[in-house]
Image (cartoon, rainbow over all chains, first blue to last red; front, top):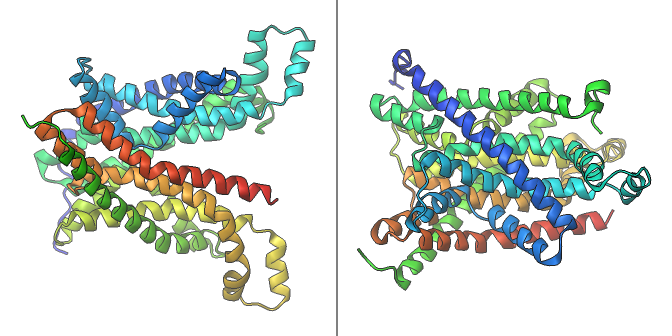
Amino acid sequence: MSYKFDFEFLAERWPDFVAGAWLTIQLTVLAIAFGFVVGTICALVRVYGGPVLRRVVGAYVETIRNTPLLIQIFIVYFGLSSLGLKLSAEVSAVLALTINMGAYTTEIMRAGIESVQRTQLEAADCLGLTRLQTMLHVVLLPAMERVYPSLASQGVLLMLASSITSQISAEELTATANLVQSDTYRSFEVYVIVAVVYLALSALYRLGFWAIGLILFERRRRLGTPL
Amino acid sequence: MIQLSVNHLLYLVEAARFTILLSVIAFVGGAVVGLPIALMRVSKSRLLRGIASGYIQFIQGTPLLIVLFLSYFGLGILGYKLDPLVAAGISFTIYAAAFLGEIWRGCIEAVPKTQWEASDCLGLNPVQQYAYVILPQAMRIAIPPTVGFMVQIVKNTSLASVIGFVELARAGQIVNNSTFEPFAIFTAVAAIYFVLCYPLSVAARTLERRAHAGR
């Protein structure tokens, strides 16, 4: 093999990679947060809602989980703009990622909510908790604690999947890589670097989820054991 | 501008054949490489375990899109002709092997320890233990999650469009370029993907339920 690796372009272009990674973080943190809210609401509807709403949420979840993210992004970006709703690439990216994350979170949170036993609700009733208190302290938080590992890995998967938004020219990490490689013709080196950055980002996200878990769940903090 | 017509839809359906072809290549390749990875993960040798788990963590920690670019341009460096199908086939094999390896490791570990002990007592050697006792049982546990992962494979083949392999997603972009009706076209594309994936999802769920009913 006579190929010579050449990482010289890094000296000049590293700020581009940092900017790209930063946009990736912004897009995905927003999408994970919004997706979590959407998913939690949909999961509550799926468990406690009326028959019509339940079916609507079911259809949403099945549609999103059985179609590729790439096509969902195209529908949001190109499709909506052709219908007259013009969104920037970044807003479209966050919207599409949120819709996607919401569907997966719905399924994960539903499993958690269904694992809360009936007797827990009865006990909360006996203690005179209001419905809101019951929802928050007896249903949602314990449900979330049980499924937290799945939520965290779904978050990491979403961060990795956000690379697909490069296809609608959201200037995140992968799009930056595409740009730099077309300037420098050092395609292999560029993608090696970006792969390493993504590895670091996934480690960072795991760490972040672990820290949030410690803050949210007292049991983990005090005893260091999951529920 | 060209009007969207039935022919365009037929073109999309025809392109779906390549989505299926690539999915089959990915699954077969992933299975062939993934099984050794799974066995390495549960091996007694620390070195083999380390190699397999490093491989899995690397692939699960990088986006599939980057793996695709790496093998597409990496092949170019090695001086091979850049056939998109070959590059896509290799990337999807690498990707599927990591995930299937990790899924199957769990299945092998789920076989009760007493089965190992019993087959040891019968004087089976390790190869016989795997072939006649452990793997047949692990396979039954593995079927539901494996079918579930097939859905991921089918959906992810859409990414092969970015290196120029004409499958369903790329065909959608091509039709869109000539007719410019993105909403209708990509909805149709999504519908075709749904038709491919939904039966697999339902099958995975049914198998999962049946597997649990037996216990």
